[in-house]
Amino acid sequence: MMKRTAMVALLATVMAGCGSNVKLDPPIEGTSTTGASTGTAGQGAGQSTVTQVQAGSSSTDAQGPVGVGRIIYFDYDSFSVKPDYQGLVDQHARFLQANRARGVAVEGHTDERGSREYNLALGQKRAEAVRRALTLVGAADAQIEAVSFGEEKPAVAGSSEDAYSQNRRVEIRYR
Amino acid sequence: MNSEIFRSPPLHLARRSLVAALAAAPLSGALAQFRVEVSGVGLTQLPIALVPFRGEEGAPQKISAIVRADLERSGRFRGVDTAGQAMDESTRPDLSTWRQRAADALAGGSITRLPDGRYDVRFRLWDVVRGQDLGGQGYVLPQADLRLAAHKIADYIYEKLTGEQGVFSTRLAYVTKTGSRHTLWVADSDGENAQAALASPEPIISPSWSPNGAQLAYVSFEARKPVIYVHDVASGRRRLLANFRGSNSAPAWSPDGRSLAVTLSRDGGSQLYLISASGGEPRRLTQSQSIDTEPVFSPDGASIYFVSDRGGAPQIYRMPASGGAAQRVTFNGSYNVSPTVSPDGRWLAYISRSGGYKLQVMELASGATTAITDTNEDENPSFAPNSRLIAYATREGGRDALMTTTVDGKIKARLAGQGGDLREPAWGPLQR
Image (cartoon, rainbow over all chains, first blue to last red; front, side, top):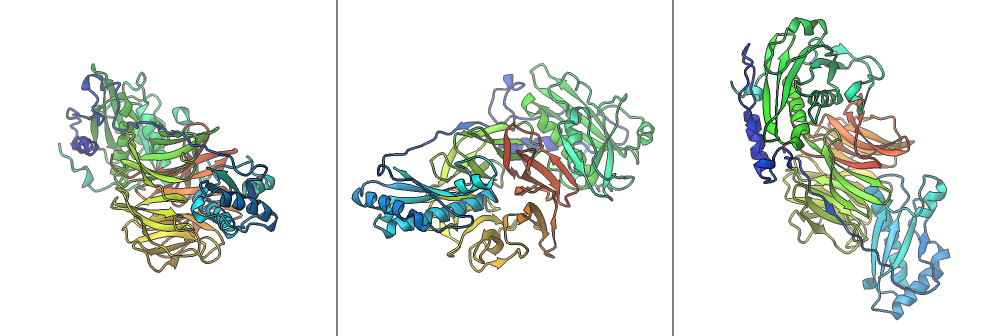
């Protein structure tokens, strides 16, 4: 609100053409919105000041079934869990069935091509496919959260087909 | 003395304008940080002389250089050489000198440091052709707002000479990735003066300005899944808007600022929901078995444009803002995403895959569509509030870069900014 008030004050100082008279009115003070004391206004925060926030991170990867792979790769533009991965899916589902208090995040990823938000939705579709595959063989829906990272966390950097194929994946992460 | 600036009739831009030459128009000296490309014939650019402000030499900001870069980036002005000339806001300039230099307009001013540390910035604009004083402005402000003063001056000049509102004093949000550091920045509209709003070890995407320009909604992965925050940039206060089961993404403010359209997967699959800006229970807008995402409101708030693959490939659709039947909007190509509507409702900008990923502009009334770049990895267009310029991300020299372009694609500028990969531009509204 103060910002807008200050701008109205600034605009009020506008002086339109006055023929040959080039005298300017004394300018109006551009008020700072940050409440900084006027004594330090010269060095102080201005109207455009931004306050920085530092975010933390939460990375958990608890113990799951030992010796079982956690990554399922996908073909280009595909969301189907290939038959090769049925054994992996079965073992995770059995573990979850035997440990009903445990849960997993099923994290979908895409390669870097295209829109970030659309890729987020594509990764979600892959994650949901793995979630369905797990529940079909005994895991409970409540044990699984399907989420997506889209193209934001590639496993491999680079813009080659090889990198893309390693980035089109779902990772199973135990909580 | 009066304040009739907003009512006085505009001058006509093309009065004695030059036709810009084909190909590049290199800038010099203090402006070298901005690389402005000009292409196409028949461009009319008003020649304006911006004399270095008195006192600018020792000042923290070169006001006249910032004003000149702003005006040139708009595509509607061309700076005229001012070597050997000096003036300030109280000078009665010898306009014949400027006529000889083929300037149609002239501005000069001063910057003075006050005893309390603040600065007094003043200027005056002249119509060289008519020999007319077009008024001026004065500000007293802290050092941190000197660039803002320069952008306000550019806005005044732009408005006086084109009759349209300038957008130089607006803000641009964008995201950088440097190593594993992700930072959400709030910068001046030229990409400079960036201040960090959020620093995170995890990705940040899809910043979106609230209509009053005070808050940013965005998607953060800091909780090891995508969740939506609303963040007051001046205070740094932020709150979770959407953290439902599954993914939460693609926030878009309604024009009245009361609600946001978002993409949630809480019910399985990415679908559109409407959620109050103060949070609470979202209301589902789409009911499809397909992906529905990237919502954006039309400026009148009546419709939502969004991306759906319900037809087998991602295309842009439009539906009533309350939900309901959707109409397909894009028909060319098999991948059309990231829609954004100009604030005047005239244009739809989006990205289309055809060879590469290219920025397209569709005139909504006619459906006529033009590709306006020659780059192949364009992303995430965002209109300036005057609907004249589009900021977008692309890839140049192996890095993610931010560009602005005029809606016709004829004038492009690469924005300065922080090092690293720059992406996800969001152009803020007028007023601040």
